[in-house]
Length: 171
Image (cartoon, rainbow, N blue to C red):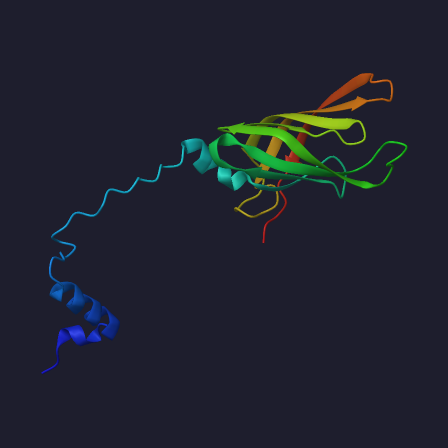
């Protein structure tokens, strides 16, 4: 006659036998588990925003924008672009986000200043032309990009334009 419980590991059987034989011990059925802090369910914004994290096209061929959606609507990332000034013409520059927020599909960020230039974006994350998640342009960032620049005399100028940044394909 075969016994059913022999399919359990020896360690499991030994643990069970020791637990039953110790005086003053209770089985799981006899004692209530200690109350642990229940993990908070992610907000709806966090659930829907996570897929928006990724790399997007920027203004010129070879330039890109990295967006990372974090907890509570915080957004981090950076812009990698070619310099346009006299001292950095053609050099590849990284400009990290000084601030960034997402609320639902509304996205905004401001970059740090590098060589007197910083960017501000205000817009939305939308579904693009990509058919499946991971396809190019599955998501797009659509809105207004303002390029601010400050010269040696601290004179600031701004130039705004409507943009659409396409998400790069993911592997």
